[in-house]
Length: 76
Image (tube, rainbow, N blue to C red; front, side, top):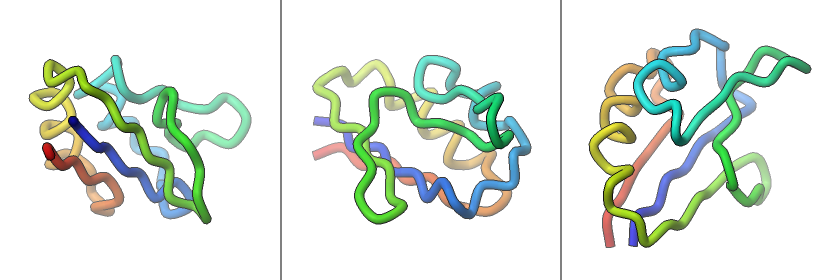
């Protein structure tokens, strides 16, 4: 299981996560912040749980590229 978490409210809209992992993220046209696709919101933490381990490589690139460090990825 792969767990990706995003603290969306702290997003500065740099778009790096979308460039690194377009299968996981897209930019919102409404407020210019990133959206973690298919995620569940819980008090500002957006979480995606997926059995698809192919998302790990791009997800880790997004984690490293994020200048405000609001993305995490964990394999359990």
